Image 1 (tube, rainbow, N blue to C red):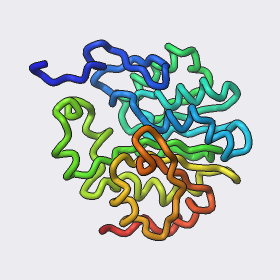
Image 2 (cartoon, helix red, strand yellow):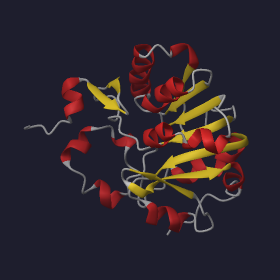
Image 3 (spheres, helix red, strand yellow):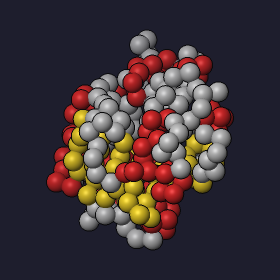
Image 4 (tube, rainbow, N blue to C red):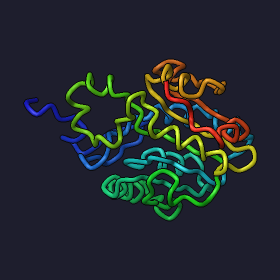
Length: 226
């Protein structure tokens, strides 16, 4: 109570979509809204089949990669993150759920070490804009700053991510991106985009999807700053 630490760090565990995950201060607490979209079956419908290859960019604790491996038992998953500490936690969760053989954990700053293309790219990046970051409850500030802070408008990671994601999608592929409360900043940064907004328990503004064609339209543009 005095230190305002998240309960998950005190217990060493957090649950997402009914699945338990190990968690400690090396990684952000698992709570991505993308997990709801995954559980809904929307991704299977959009692809028209189960994905063969999935990338969890900014995988953090590995929860989305593990949930993907559990949902699609024949898929090969890559979990990429800039933090070696977070990847260590992700590996523990892969081992816990016995999916280690189907998940490749990759230390990469964005796309730097990612060469492959995928049927599905999931990304819950650092997207909290500075003004919101400064107003977060103290419990959030116990989590790794690199996993949360998205810069002045929340788009510092998302701009370069979207500028290259199209070239990493297979034909018919999709990218599913979480942006939390930053829809206004997203629409200012990418005014030409008309993404598909996906409903979650947080409403219809927090998670969006882009087809490969839409993603490729951003290949030569990184989003204009407001």
